[in-house]
Length: 326
Length: 254
Image: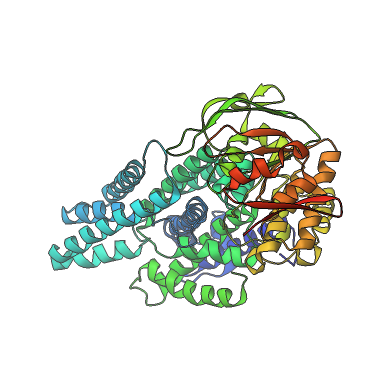
């Protein structure tokens, strides 16, 4: 880094940005509200309509969007360090594939609501355990074994998904496709996502400096005193859990976990002490903003949020890549 | 700090080597010599507890290495790797600053002015100060090697385990690095290095260990062990010896 803004001031700026995005998102929708109306409604004042809109519809959805983005982005940043592979993302180990298969199965069976979230979570956990179990040999897991096992399992899930879409009755296909591309309209409660996010941050931040050392390679990290096995296990469990919760909340929103951490690395360098919180904030902003557009641009119709994250993220990322230091 | 081994057997694939016993004292510079694949790097990694041994004991200042915490080892022992692993993009200064990790692992510790000053000093000693903000990917092999050595200097270990320090370095920087390592020995640090260049060992090492593939290793004072009679079977190569400026020199005779 040539320009030395202190870590804290960077994060403070990003926090302000996040607040702006959240307020903007709260003000947009079928009834547009001004910033002061949003502020009043948040203090449980103002018109009844505004209060109901804000508290019952928009706050849960915006909070769910923000937490999903933050979880995916943080999980992606951790996966990239764990696998020492810049192409890793939260879904690389087949987590979203497992969740998708279970959810599509549940949709085919006619289930809905909370049961879908439950199916997603179970699928994500099964897939994680499968990948971790199969990648073990003599108690050791190398990143490359983990990566290959995950990629192959993900491909297997992909085939199951295609099969299910092929045999599904036509009236169920739109719902299935929406889920596959990420959809926040079924996000019932943001609490699980927020608790997971804050707990994960609390656990991983004390290890941020160890992750810096780990990103120089496991042998070098061990020589510098990092307990490589412990840190790698921790990162794997946290990243899997965060991905499972994100997928449970919003379906498989693509792209955020791959691109946001890289954007942050291109802008801020590779110090995990800044990258991890910055990626969480930026991921939250991206998904919140994308979801705002997804639910307003052709209202009352909604677009899958995953499409919007990709449409917003791809050009931004390519621009940064040309400017950056990778 | 003293480093010693008792009947240490390395875990080399498909090979049984006679076990090694030795005592290495502070202020000494040990050169480990031997043909390719004899286990020089494996020995260094085993001494740093980065690899399992087959049997025997390694003692760091009399304490069994297996009883030492990973972090305690890193605070006292530094390793220069032969191969530099490719991690995420990082600059020279960032890489060097990581060397201090064992002494301050807290995520909330900010690199102080003093840290930066010390890191800059390490960069200066390796003539890297002009490259401080360059990404590693833009460096030559020799510059990367010097970056790794600067990080080790900043780590300031009491025991230096360096795997082929002269790798990729031009003659000027070979001399500079060897001088730096012998300064460390003068400050009562222990330096253990693997070498391929016998002439660097005759010039800079106080002690040598000759690892033979087929017979027990020889260990002792450099001037006693580095002879044509010992070196020819070591490398399976006819050698010629001579003197240039009072310095013993070995060359392959072809």
